[in-house]
Image: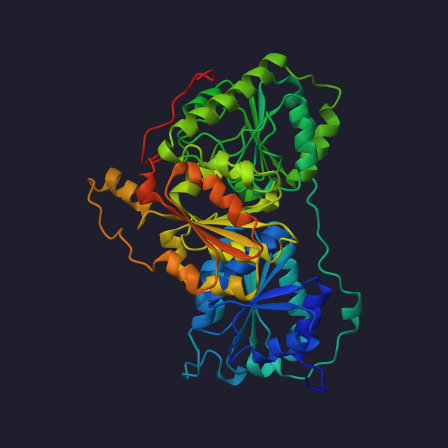
Length: 557
């Protein structure tokens, strides 16, 4: 560290004041001053990923599992471009993330002079990929830009923010800001709803006979009021991203069995006289492109006024923080509403019937969620890639108890699960991390396996190996006349890969061996690998919309 306080020293100290203890990235010619300052202060753990793509997802996974800001350092140009996929995913997830990247010296910026890693309009690329992007143009504005970037990242709706710091600015001397000693992060303004809006919502809930909540990721702070509303006889369902707001074992919580392709749930919605949607986009991905028939009396709660009617029509829209709105709603309806025993019984029966029907649609994989739940610690982190298994039992049947367990690519990108899981494992604080990925997703970011081993993480990696892109095959069967093309992948023998990587390995070739293998792997401290040979177990049935809808089933069967 130089005797002279510079912008890189300020960045390192600013992150410490923000409560950052872990950062991810790649060291590069254009970020050495910043990483050197972090190293010299020795208060932030820097995780060396194998590529910026992986590092960006790790920072996102860390933010989701910890509830804190994720931090990423990338190289300039191609390195910054490699980070884009992670920024896009973090934006989908509303993950608070600060991305620091370098830039050529200020006298060469945007002049097309062919400097190392010099690409046209890097700042524009980053601004389009995240919530916002800033360039520190001189040393004196550095502290102000850092505060503005942190406020953007951490103010709801949260998101990824990039800060571009030219190399000469990184080394530039700056007076240490006097306000830095008092800085503790941005003030979180809470958007309070209008009292009359809550009064009107309470009136509807009090008179409703068959009410439901639909909670999304924007409601992850609303556990207590949501639980109490369930005790008042309100049913509940979540988006996939909203899983764990309320423990999914609760009999009045359908979890992510939210309707697409599930006939019992779709039919039940038509009997609901009030649905309150809080902090959810009601995305096309989860509603079969908005064809799931939701209740006609739908009231939406969201921080973003532009969400009003964006996907489904509503009868009323309340602008405000979901947790605050539901807390205020609870105050008004407690003592005014009694649960209907008949409705509660119907809802519990719906949950049991739907779970059984969906489970029965999974062919040889019907027992996998139960086998895993029996041996996985209740507080374990459940990180997944986009696979057939995650889109079915992994997302819908394995119960989660807390929203910070729920780590998966919300934007549905393949190959992100391992890196998201690595980031989450670094925030696990003693909890075991389980990562489920397909072979296609695993091979896409295979190098990050060695980030997990170098960091000595405690994680079980489940590789569901069907020798290719299984869901693509189902899509081709439905939409390309069954012509399966470009779906078969060669890859390394996973047992050999585990051996040369010094990773304990299990292969599962029979359905009933799955739980035992997971239990044995989970008992080992460190990184372990389980390969599920789907070619031996059997084809996974296609799920809706590539397969048939799941019909009703008698709970006695």
